[in-house]
Image 1 (cartoon, rainbow, N blue to C red):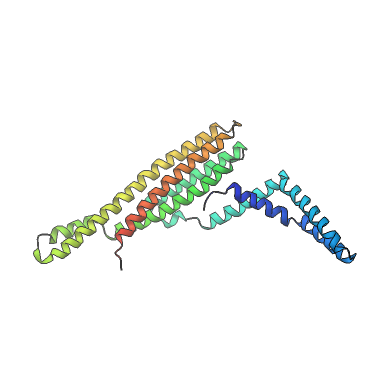
Image 2: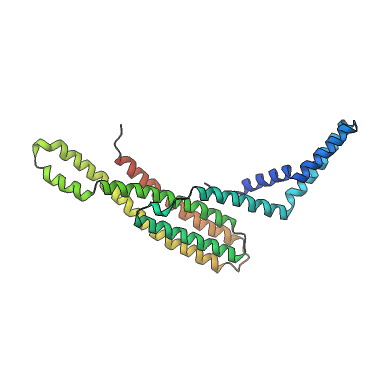
Amino acid sequence: MEPYSRGEFNRALISNALLSPFNVVLLAVMLVAGLLLNVFVFVLPVAVVVYGIAAARTYFDEDEAAKVLEREKGRRRKAIERGRLNPAALAPPIRTLLEGAVARERAIRDAIARAELPYEEVSDEVDTFIRAIEDSARRAELLLEALDASPPEAVERRLAEVKDDPARAELAQALESQLTVLARMQKQLERFFDEMERILVELDTVRGNLVSVSASTDSANQQRLAADVRGLREEVGAVAEGMSEAYETSVPSD
């Protein structure tokens, strides 16, 4: 899920203005009155103009905009929460990293709330970042399960037993291929752990920067912090793609 954009917010504002109960009722009353008084043709353009003015007033109303933003954010947050990965379903080492990411997510949100500043861009990027972390955790779990099912050490031992037997040359070749794939998977899994540990440190830095600039009124702070989190998300995505490639190449094609 991509961050909530200004375009999406603008469309929500337009929809809210056009479908506002007061504005719709106002339009309906004028049209009904025109029908009852048999002057519908004359009332219609006037009703449309009045409705447009009322809708524009609603669109530009700051209080209404705040309500719309809060409502849309709430809907988005619920959608995100419904798809969240349960850390308890993961192996302990991966679970620890995911729980660490979630804890830092909460700390960043707490810092945003306490700063009393509209850091929507940062909040949106954190939402998307955590989804990227969860996607990486899912892929890492697949790699870990595959490595547990076929431990490289066991494959190496079996290869040592058969590699000098000419009658088992094809088996030895298959085991060597398997070891190559397992080594690639192991490397990707190690990269996941290394990158996640570093990214958790970077998230702590993001939170520290957020706290340090909370007293500032510079609007560039929000964009800079959002860019920091966005950069981390892109790095997590690269790790996830690498793990996906390693896992897919380990599965024989039909």
